[in-house]
Length: 112
Image (cartoon, rainbow, N blue to C red; front, side):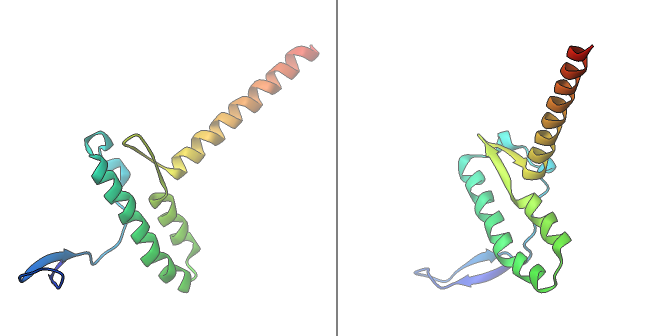
């Protein structure tokens, strides 16, 4: 972050400008402590991270870094709860696995 002069003020004023755009570690955020405006700010920040960083990663053809970045910026906000997209995918895969296992069990027990 650096201090920059704002031109849209009536008098001389300064604000902070973001220099580094990286997603926050969701494990370090207590979503229940965030206000709605903070959740909104976080969503906007993640959009900005993707907008600025992904083109640079595409230019470097770094698909692994793009996946890492999008996994962390594509979060679902259930109420005020942040749940990273990759965790949702893991839960869905686990549920599908359990359903398949259960149907296999039913098939084996019905043929016996």
